[in-house]
Amino acid sequence: MHVIETVLPGLRVVETDVFGDERGFFLETWQAERYAALGLPGHFVQDNLSRSARGVLRGLHLQHPHAQGKLVYVIEGEVFDVAVDVRVGSPHFGRSASVVLSGANHRQLWIPPGFAHGFCVLSEYALVAYKCTTPYRPGSELGVLWNDPDLAIAWPRADVVVAPRDQGFARLRDIPKAALPTYAEYADVVAATEQR
Image 1 (cartoon, rainbow, N blue to C red):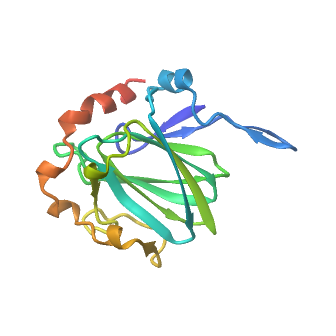
Image 2: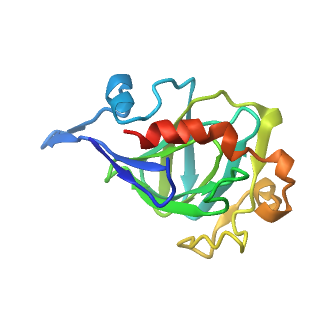
């Protein structure tokens, strides 16, 4: 297992060890000691699973307060996965990074607290799983418009299916800064990840 750095400090791709033969394969989707040795969090409190059809776009979601770090991976299918740094005061504020996650490549994406997250399904359907460091808190839900022109995310499809709620999110520049997480709040989490 090894980690690939992205253009955004703290946002990391994990390539898992896969053991396969003619019967199928086996892999660990998370193991506290091994992930801690790579600088990834060892404490998750909630697991989520979503199933979406081709062209469904979910996002861009986050929580604040009670920001969640997420370890995202795909069990079946393929998605274009995106994270955006929305921490006020971050040198990377408003920048995004993307990766294709699939049931075939077994990659995972570690998204630190303070980042917005979304994905678009590229296959017939996709089962997306993610572990969260903080429980879901309905009162802390926040979203950024998925096609915010300032973010310039190169989504791989133009014909996407987006929920009305997600379609109604504001552009990042129109969200009051006081409603967003700050770099100072979560810089230590990112720094701990970068030191490994």
